[in-house]
Length: 450
Image (cartoon, rainbow, N blue to C red; front, side, top):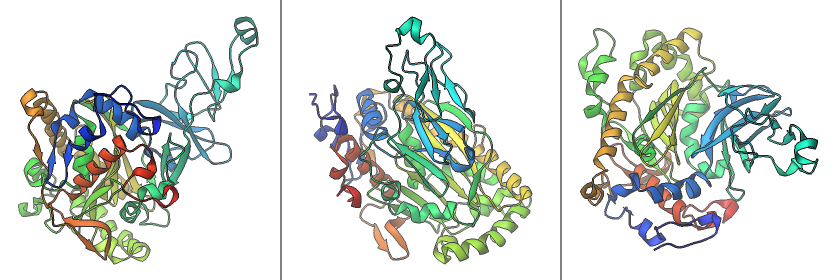
């Protein structure tokens, strides 16, 4: 049975009702319906109601430092150009010519004064305004109004400590309100130094045959898989002569989740950088740590030595000292394009940066040891879910159910590291964004829209 609402809560031409979607996730019992990973109608609703309304990661500030610098990214399946303007602000618009839909820029990044469609030559300025149409007099009799034919522009573009986000929704809350208590944990990555962070050149991109939510969910809270999926990889990355027992994942972790759908797991051991070598470890445990203690305090440095996290819906971060950021771009219900970048403390010496970079590439890249373990799991899960019996068999998401608590040291909901609280809150937000007509109908009461 289909229903129809306005575009703020769009069920257009969908077989799914609000009640049907709510029935897919039962957080009281701790169950998931596998159809969330394979159903094409749900996927189309995700593109409209989740990616179309959320704040989506676009670029790091250091990737577009100068006027005219641009970076191409995606929001859902929509290609977006992110461009630094002459006044230092950042604009974003759909990378689509309004004549026949060709991309107006086919380069991943660079610097440009204008963008010209390679099909028929329509040209646009840095803000996405149409400024020239070839043969305007002969072909259009001067009757075309250029101001009417620019591509759709992002309604809001904001930055949080170097990370640039954008949204199509004019009614979305501010970025800081959207992030909510997640900013406390993001600062662990982003605010360790007065110099901030910088992105290293290049983006790894590769496609895997699995649903985007599998990856986003794992980065929310899944420390449970590490000792099993990554056992051999953890042993392989230990320094020569190290005690093999060091390969066991820390058991001192906690996890955070919030009504906004963001989540993370964190631990107090410097495990993440064990394979980076002595020079990197000396910097991380010495001057880098001392400055971080001054800026962030003991809790966010001593209690959070490493962390994996997801900003709803599809932006994840992992590491400490240096870290990988990745966007899980949906390319259909059964395909994800992974974009992975490396971010480092801007004050780190070059030798330390290179050591950290090599460690991240060795572990979390298309050929990374940990990465291959993860993507094999996700791809195999997707193949399993093709079966009709598999799709009708519920999954257990009840780890740690009923044991969440409040901890005055940490904002949000806290659970022991081996739990699925973050994933449950991620999927609760997923349900709400698919079904809520407006931002005011979300359970997380946001000041600007309440």
